[in-house]
Amino acid sequence: MDGHNGPSGGPAGERARGVLPMIKYQIRPRGAIVRWSPTNHHRRCECRHTYAYPNAVIFAVVEERKKLAKDNARLETEVNQLKEANKRQAERIKELEYDVVEGQDRVDDLYARLGEARERMVKRARKVRVRAESILNLCNDLLEEESDEASYIGGGVGGEPAQFGRSTSPTAD
Image (cartoon, rainbow, N blue to C red; front, side, top):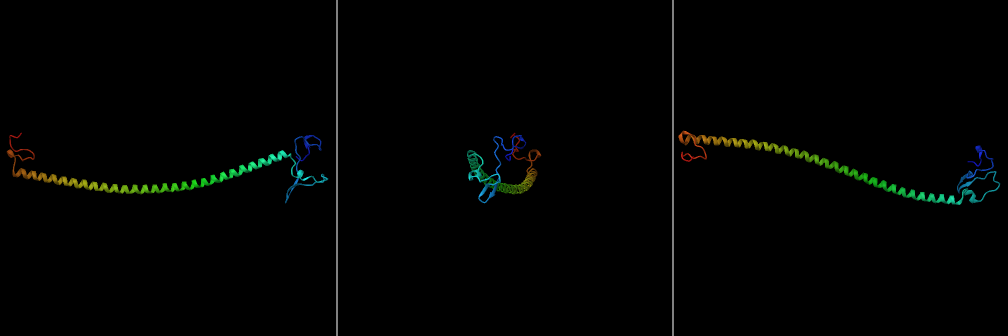
């Protein structure tokens, strides 16, 4: 939009309604200023150099920029807070993972120690069982020897060996 209607078919000097002219400006240390051109025989006032739009539009844009700047600052602060919270959560997760790994190592160690203790107890139980069986066998052998000796020495009624817990008299039955 250079101020000419061009291919629109209208006269070259007239502007279409609602179309704003293009503002030619230069960046200077004091800010952007409208460039002087040969078509301008005299310089315009400062307000025309700075704004080519109605004041209401400019003020609305300035207000919108202020609101956007405030919203942007608020959102940046919120993003920074969320980043910090995210970092703290990541650190906490790493600590918890480390604690879980330590706990698993302790459980594995205890499991191995319990397995070793169980093996020792099983071996002891086998030894006790074998020893108990040998003691029982020894007792049975001793009892059999005693019963054999008692049957040879005292003899039972009618030549039968005496039995423990029974009376030897024929009338006791």
